[in-house]
Image 1 (cartoon, rainbow, N blue to C red):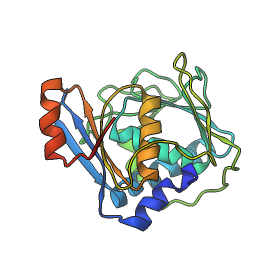
Image 2: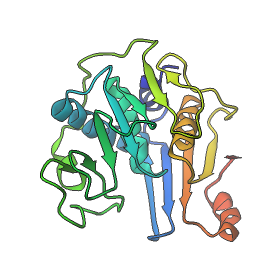
Image 3: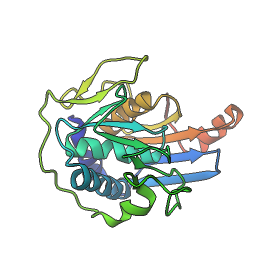
Image 4: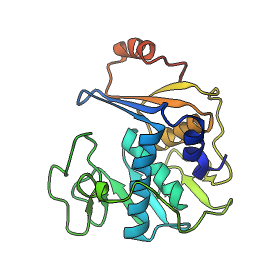
Length: 227
């Protein structure tokens, strides 16, 4: 499955099914998004990328974000416009980051109910919490990536193969699995997300969680596969 077809595949299968559940135990938040709600976030982010950055095939985006539900919709938005997520780039065409001081970037606030960044962002940056809601929740791509276009380049020094749009994710994730992961490398998270969605599954992400609490969470969330 092409990476830009992951989200359409989830919507065709079951738009009401939870597709990502994110526990941030550093803040006590639990957020769960169905396929339909995830698609709304993706559409807004993709429209922002197209309208503000003319993003499309050939555009390089770096996601300076942790493993998180917001990272999921930004990654899917990048693939929706045909861009390449290159985690090794220090000077990408578009930087999506949690750093409120980043200039010329899309500044993301992780808190679910945030309506603006905690601090004013630089004049050349976009405050995602304030601006994203203003973009349409329907999206039509201006261009489609070619099969051979790069879609995901790993961060260094971890390395790993570059994924093209036609490569699709390779994984042993079982069909329709409920997959739990402890937040780690953003690139590893993106690969796992892609593999899970290609298998028509759903993700449970734990951040800042006491290891002693994980077994109870896995049981309560109906997890069938851990990674």
